[in-house]
Amino acid sequence: MKRALVAAALSACSSGPSQSERAPPSVHLVVRAKAGSGLSLAGSQIEPTTSLLGLRTSADQLELDVRVGSPSVTVTTPSTCPAEVDLGDAGAGETRSVTLQPWLSIAGGDLTQIGFDAPFTVTLTPGCRDALASKVEWSQTAGEPVDLQVEQNGFVVRGRTRPLAAPTPWGIVPLSPRTRGEVELTAKSGKHSLKVRVSAAARASGLPSLALSQRVLLGGSGWRVRERAKDGKAEIQPAGSLQSFQPDARGRWVLEDREKRELSLVVGTHSDTLLDCGRSDCHAQATAGVKSSRMTHVFERGLRGQLMRYDASCALPCHTAGEPGLPDGGFTQVLGELGHSGHFELKPEAWNELPRALRRLGGVTCTACHGPGAIPEPAARWAVLRTDVCATCHDAPPRYGHVAAWNATRMAQADRDERARREPACRGCHTTAGFLDRIGARKDTGPTTPDLELGIGCAACHAPHAEKQDRALLRVLPALKLPDKAKPSRICVECHSGPDASAATLLYDHDSPGAHADVPKGCVGCHSGKAASLEARGRNHSFRSNPARCTQGCHAEGVPAAETRLRERALAALRALGGRVDPKRPLHAGTLPKPSDPKRREALESVRLVLADPAAAIHDAKRTRALLERAEALLGLQR
Image (tube, rainbow, N blue to C red; front, side, top):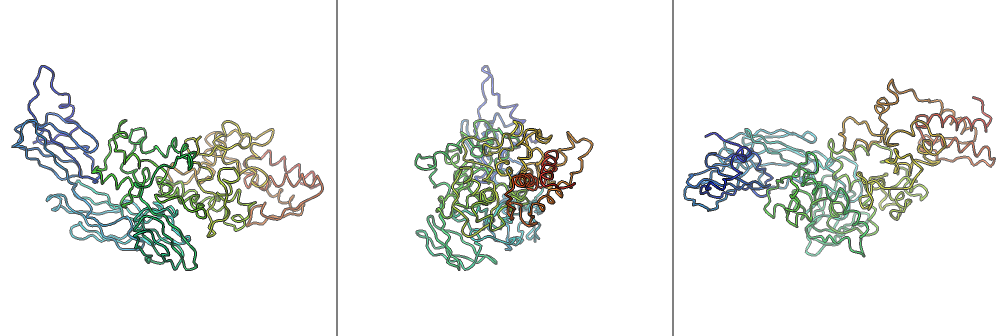
C-alpha cells in the first residue's frame, strides 16, 4: 500500500465533514515519541492511508482518527521503528495509544564526564528486529579527531578522549564547549542516523557554585576534603596530572590544597534553588535589568518562532539552565522526568504551553551563569568576572567565536604584568574589577587570591544586569563627545582616551576631527575583526582592523600606506626631552620626564598623545602631524 506523509494527509482529512454529512465512526489513536528521546514526529507516515479520517498534531504527539473496522495501522517516522497497532477489536469512540521507539538509542552510561585522555565505549540498542539486523557505520562529525574501533556490527564503538591542554589555573579548572574535549559521532544505519556526543568533562565556569554530580577538575596539588556537606561521602579523585571532585550531597564543602589554601564550594540543583533573587533586600536592581534581558528570554523567543532557523533541542545546553546528561535539576533532566520527548514545535503559544517547572528553567537566568549553589563568599566573588563564565556558551567555534577571538587580543593580556594586576593606579584600565570600580559599577576588592591573570573580560563592556541595554548588552557610559554615528563605540573610549591610551582623543577630542571621525559606528566600524575561521557571531571580538571596510567606501582604489616616519619623529622628540620607551611596556609604564619649563611640558603632552596610540598615523594623520610639528617647534628640533 502506498504510504503518505502526515502533512499530505492533513489537507485531506483535517477539515472534517460538512453539517450535511455524518462523520463515519472512528477509533482515536494517540501516537507519542519515547520520553526524553528527542524524536520529532514530523514526517510521520501512516499506512494504509485509506484508514485515516483525521489527525491533529502537537510537538510530542499525533492524534489520529482511524476508521472503525480497520484491522491495523502502521506508524513510522524517519528516526523510529515501524509501530503496528492492532485495531481489529476497537469500537467506535475508543482510544488506543502507541509509543514510537527510536531505531537506535544509546544504552545508558555517562558520556558527559568521561575524563581527559580516558577510554570510552558507546553501545547502541536497536529498537526493533529490523534495526538489529542492520549494520551501523560510524563517522566523527565534530571535535578534535579521535581514533575509533568499531565492534559487533557497529553496535559498539570505542575510543579515547584527548588529553587536557595545559596549563591550568589554580582551583576549579574552567571548561568551555571548545576545551571540554567534546566530540560528535554519527551512527548511520540505512536511512536512519543518530548523533552521539562524548565529552571528557562537563562545562565549568570556574565558580565555586556547583551542581550536584558535576565533576570538576582541580588545578594545584595535594587536594583533600576538609569539610563535607551533610550526608556527603565524596572524596578527591586522581585525574591524570590533576585531581577531580564530584560532590554527592547538597550544601557547603571545603577543599584544601597542599599549601593549606582553602576552596569553599556550595552545591545545589537548578530545580531546587530558590529564584527569589529580586527581593528588595537582595538583588532587586539586578533582577529588574535581567527581566528585560535578551538572554533571559532567548529560549522563550525561540519557542515562539521569533528567532530565525531556531532549533530548540540543539539550543538546550546554552539557552536553558543545567548541563544535558547530568542529574543536576536542569531543564533537560526535568524535561525527561515530565515525560517530554524533547522535541518542540515552534509557535506563538509554545512557551505558555510548557509546564511551569520548565518555564522556570528556560532561558539564561540566574543559576545558568552563577551556578545552582549560592553566591560565593566575598573573598571569591571576583570569579564571576572571569571570561570563563561567558565561555561556557560563547566559546564554541565556529558557530560562537567570541571568546576564541578575544583570547588573541591584547585585552586578554591586559593584566599580564604583575604591576598592572596589583597597583591601584593600573587596575582601573588593566583589570576588569578595577575598571568596573572606576566607572562606579562594582567595588574593586583588590587582586585575586590566588594571583591570576584575567585580562579585560566580557563583564567590562557587557552588563547583563543593567536596566538599560542595547542588543549586545553593552554598558551605557558617559564619555568623550562622540558623533551620533559613533555611539556604538562609547564603551571603547572609556579606556582608549586620554594621555595613556590616546586613540579616541586623537579621533574625536579636538576642534577639527579627521576623516576617520566620520566612520559609521566609530571604532568598531573599522575594528570589526577579520578572522576567516570564525563565523559572524563573535568575529568582531578580535577587534582587528578590517582593511576590507576601507576599500568598500573611501579608499576604493586601495588603502594608502601609513606614514611610519611620524612615530620615528615622536620618538626623537621624546629623546630630546630626556625620555625613552621600554619596548616591553607601554609608554605610561615607563619613567617619563617631568620638565619644569612650560614649553617642554607642552611638547611632552603632544609627544605623549602620539606615542600612546600605536596607530596614531592611521587614526588621524593630520592631527598627529600637527602635534609633532608643535612639539618640534617648541623643542627647536630640525626636520
